[in-house]
Image (cartoon, rainbow, N blue to C red):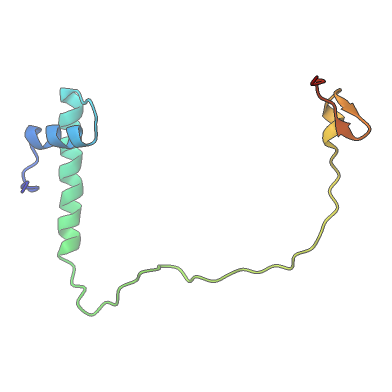
Length: 96
């Protein structure tokens, strides 16, 4: 088991290998510091007392917003933008 309280080069190498990333030494050091900062925030969140708090599986109310389905006239002719048309059809090459 990996000790996630100790972020070092070996852990960063392992994470980079799992993620299939080729990190430079500078990137590895930078990402290690960022990962330490993120884990520190999670440590603070772990200390919050949530004993009497109900879980919120959906933070916003789920409801359908219905609208009346009305047909609208649509003015569009696909044949306007081509010179390959004949009698309201697209004209293609002859296949013999």
